[in-house]
Length: 274
Image 1 (cartoon, rainbow, N blue to C red):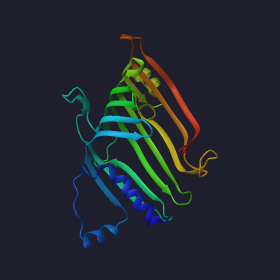
Image 2: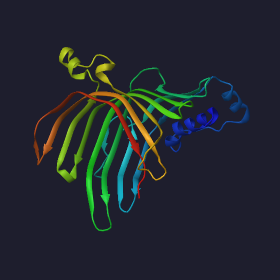
Image 3: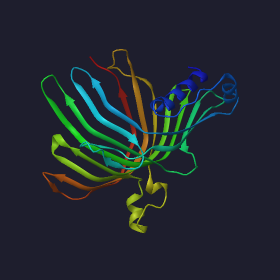
Image 4: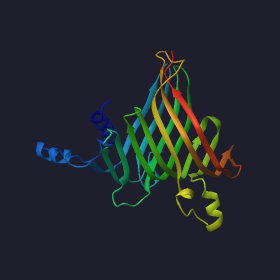
């Protein structure tokens, strides 16, 4: 795939989820010529995305209903569900093509400050069959910050390389089919507990953000009908996880902490089956 095609792909990936909500202006031929002549393209964006249902249909159905992506916080929507309370805003997406044809995408903040706050709400996750259904989880509210997101489409290896750093400052969810409720879950950097113990709060990126590098590319798989699969590799991911409350049977069983959880040298192949 040539560099120009990569740029088109990268632009589509960056813009597609938000096109229905972002304020857009048409460009005439002269304006488009000016954009083409620059070193790269920058997109400034603010948006809120609401999805009634995300559905995977096989013989049965896996569905997520009441999905909201924005910023701010999680609030009651007034109809017995939850939603996000603000815009995913101040986003600046820089898209460039390197001399070797690689597409380079950097997601940052318009004012140059990091992190970028985000919020995600999902009202229900369920399995549905012809005669039965199961409510897997409900009232899923996630609030966090994006510290870094760099994406490279590598033409030499035909792979997508993503460097990301993020945290989850609060996550609540009900795991209905198990009767378990999680409250105040945090996913932070690998030095979070150590820095909090020393100074009462995380002091740098190592304490604030869980970071990972993911490489996604086509690979081979003996079990695949075509012999091909989607390969996902994680070289290293380190995090501290804190769960303030875990309620089972209506009673809080206490705080759960995972210190320096590290996932490394991990490879996964994804393909369809009959």
